[in-house]
Image (cartoon, rainbow, N blue to C red; front, side):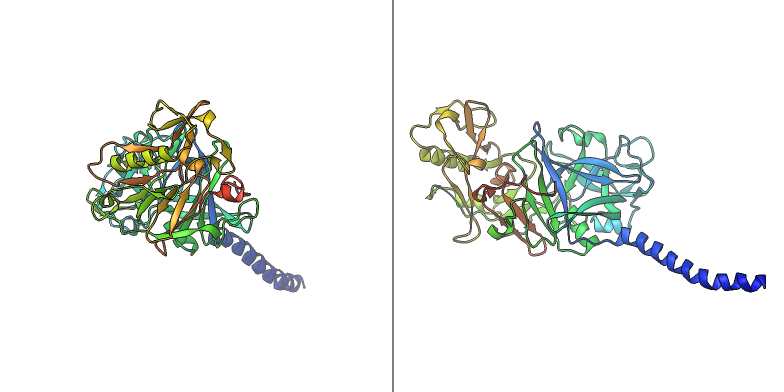
Length: 440
């Protein structure tokens, strides 16, 4: 009789136990298979370095890391020399699939220069070339995998945290973080020629489009945002969809980098002309050609747009000519050479009252307009300066490098899949800005 009761009880309990096990397993699986359509990074402007800094969570247990945004970077790299502790760290072994994804054949034992075995210093590991764009350090980083998490977007609100358990990144020595900013431990690479840059890896992991958009804040107190993924619109707090004003220009084919033995991950575009208040600025068109070792790139390493000497002189002269006669010029303030008395310049919803700078792109009637908020910068109470700098020596490289000040409070979309970049005009036209959103 007792045996009968035990068997009967088992008959009812066993299916319930199986059901409970399925529920638990499904919930555990959901934590690793959540596929968001869009994720994002909050971005803060550092008041000293003027770099745009974000934070990711990495490792086991998770650790928040401040990293500098590097548009042309091939990967995420972090300082592994000081305090890297993680139970889920795995160095990539020579000839592994991770090394192939990172397009490297560099292999060896502890080539980063660290003394103690551990993250960044392993036997038979592979390495890629990493860069500090501020001080032009190029060195080796040990390729590895670890847990990484990132916040998702659900409509107009922050969604669940998404996890990649085996995110590929690079380990570097502490010296590579030089000048990146206080407590900044590395960089986040967004390069389009690399299979291990952040947007490309996230697209592969979450099955969304290889696309991201910068909305950099002009404020050092309030965050901007980087959208990554299938955003069909970019909603700011006001309800304005910043994508509706985007004009697109192609991403040009990158030159070959003999140092890295691969194509450069810089974002190159065609600039065909520059005009100020509708008047064309005379420019040597050879300098605008990428094929003739000139051209234009976009950089997050430079706070201000840099122009080759002849272009800089032509632009500054044309800008001064278009300023109202009552605006007085004042002595230059480094790094700028063209400065004005701030009391002579009025303000509007577009920032300083200044001549419009119109950047002509790849074809007629496709252009990007720069207004006073992005063309003039206040350096002290009495002085504002034209926010462009001269590239004094140019033995190689682009004639125009677009810096972050000119992109602030504009939406700039990088569509890697369709090989195009979209520019909005200043969000001030719509009485909003990049810090005016719900997510950060």
